[in-house]
Image (cartoon, rainbow, N blue to C red; front, side):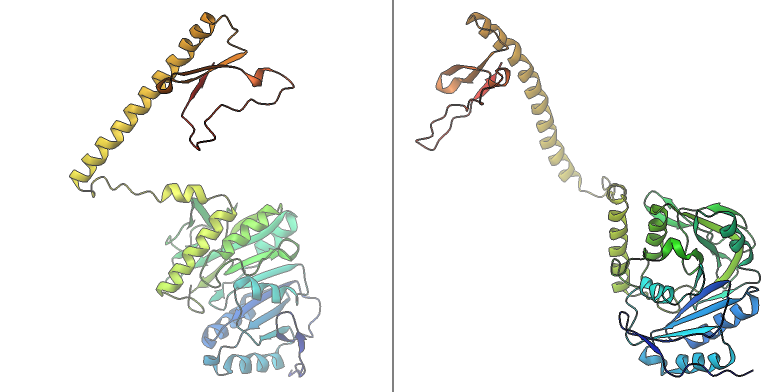
Length: 379
C-alpha cells in the first residue's frame, strides 16, 4: 500500500538538517545508514536490510547530498518512503564533517534503545541481528557489539580489533569467511557494522576531535564507551559484506597524512604516545658511514669515561671534607665547607637545612663586579 511521506520537514538548526520523520510505531531497533552518493551501494544496502532483518526496525537514512549525486539519492529515498512507513530521512544541507556527526544526527531521531550503525557500503547477511539482540538483553553492561565484516571476495575484513603494541589490527584478517564465529570481549570493533545500546553512546560521541572520514574515530569511540564502564563485544554470529572506503575513502597522500594525525591524536588521548614513540625507533647502524660512527663513538666514549671519573672524584670529596671539618673541630652535620681552590677561598658556614626556624644562607659571591666564582660546597 502506498503511503504519503511527510512533505514538510522538521528542521534541526544545530546540524542544519531537514528531517522527514517516519510514521512507523513500536520498532525493536533503529538502523542508521549514512549515505554520500554511490546510489548503487545504498540500494544494495537497504535491500539487504529489508530482506534479512527479522525484527521490526526503524530505518534512519542520513544523506549529506553531494553535488555529484545530482539529487538521485534523495529522489530514491523519498520514493521509498511512499512504500515504507518505517523510514526517517535526514537531509543535511552541509557535508558531514565526521562520522560522529551523522551518528549524533541519527541518535536524535531514534525510536528505541538499540542503535545499529551500518554504512551504505555494507550488505547484511541473514539473521545478522538475532544473537546480538539476545546479548544485549542478557548482559546490561554491553555497550557496543561489532559484527563480522567480510570482504566481497569472501575473506574476513575484521572480526574485532586488537592492539599489537600501539597498532590496531583487525583480528582474523583475510581468514576464510566461515571462521571467527565466536563471541568475545574486544578491545575495539569497526563501527561500519555494529549494534549499540543507545544509553552507552548518546552524548559520548565527540565531534571535531579527528579529521573526518580517514580512520581512527570508531576505535576512539570504542575506548570512550569502555571508559564509561560499558563492554565492547565481538559477535561472529552476525555478519555483513563490507566494501571498505568505497563511499568516502581516499588513497591520496593528504588522506594518509590526515590518518596519521588522527593516530597521533588517539595515542595522546589514550596513553599510547610513549609506546608509539619507542616503537618508531629505527636501527640505522648498518646505514651510517663507518667514519661517522667512529668519530661519534670516540666523543661519546670520552664523555662517558669523564662522567664516571667525575662520580668517583665526587665520592672522594665527602670523606675528605669530613676530615677537614674534624680538623676544624666542628660537627659535620652542622657546618658546610664552601671551597674554591683557584682563589684560595675556604669558607666555613652553618648548614641552614639542619637549623630549624632559620632562613637559608645564600652563598657568598662578588656581586659588585657581576662575576661570581664557581664554588664547591660540601659537608
